[in-house]
Length: 556
View 1 (tube, rainbow, N blue to C red):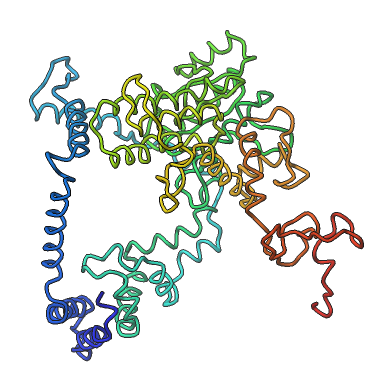
View 2: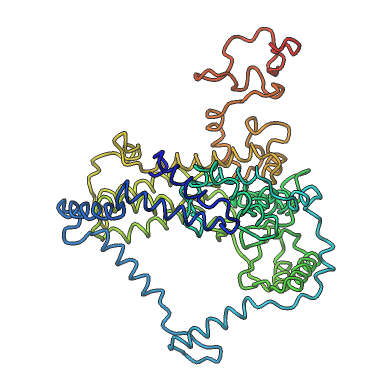
């Protein structure tokens, strides 16, 4: 509001440069002086804005009461309050059993038991052999990267970082949002540059330094780590996990010439691939023991599990299990909410989605909810539940219809097994509100949209681990668009192929050197109808590229 007024700039300029010649007048003093003067100017020009807003909120609340939105209490508020209260009662710790076996209900004793328990879990043993094992780790930070990290910060970097900030988000401890510096940079520039660069270049660690590290994280962090790295998704390794588990020849490569995978790193977990032999099991155990000795951390064997291919003899499984001291997981058990294997019985693997949504809706049906409350619950909970699984797999159409039917029945107020009239079809309710619908999701279309995003990412990030593995297995001699299902495809790949047509329809080439774009097959023309050449092919072959149409000497 202030920045729209020309007079505001005059106030800032006078307040900022009031004592410019005084060397003791630091940037914090200038900011404080600006705040005081701007507040005085605001009171004289706009008045007490906070008081005006409070009046309008009170007026709005009275209108809502008159409109019966809160008559006898809001039913949605009662429902959500009751749910929160029930959860609080259910999660309340009344007492704990101490290590000596005594039951304690005193709050002080409970706190002591909790602190002791987690203190023992996270206690670090002294590292004994770290230097020896560090020699086996490859260097990831190149001399050029190290030089860029050690280089002094420059004015251009400061201004670039400032422009990337959201104008009204994350105000500093002084209470000044980024828009102040962006709008009046010509006034505050010298003092801000001097203050910030001195802080950064004198080895003080402000928050902005993380941006320098962020630019090289992709190169430094191993490609098997897919979470919390820009440009990578945790679902990348979920997809690779399905490929590894469906190819049981070696257990570490999905096909010949594909990158060999020994491990995949998720957020807090590590999946290790090895042959089911005592020798290889001993090597894995030795690596884990070295890690425990170097880091002071220990592997939680209670949360460690083993998976064997179906051709592993039972006696070998028992021997490996005894060595690791871990449990063996079977076919349809879940990992990160996803089924480890998907066979022919896809409905059995995905029935958990229906069960989860069904349990939630069953708990809502007996409540007195308004249409607004039902809308929020459907959009925020019921439709959001299968999102992660839909990012990796194509959900069967019949299951999508059943989920939509459950949500439709809940929307029209069905209770128990009674039948309610659906006055409008669910397809119309899934249209945007500006077109007369309610903006609910079409589950099948949403599933395909998430898979399209995955396919586009694989196609674009050709240096990623997930792209190289999928390419060697499914389209080694062609492009992603030309890829076929192939022999024994995983269900992840089948799902991406189902969404490939959407990528083809929604993408087109931005012509650069013209050497990769074919004249007849690719979409590269600025014609909205099809973006392809529609004239008959007479002079050029089917695989001729656009570069053959250009006279490089005349540039025409």
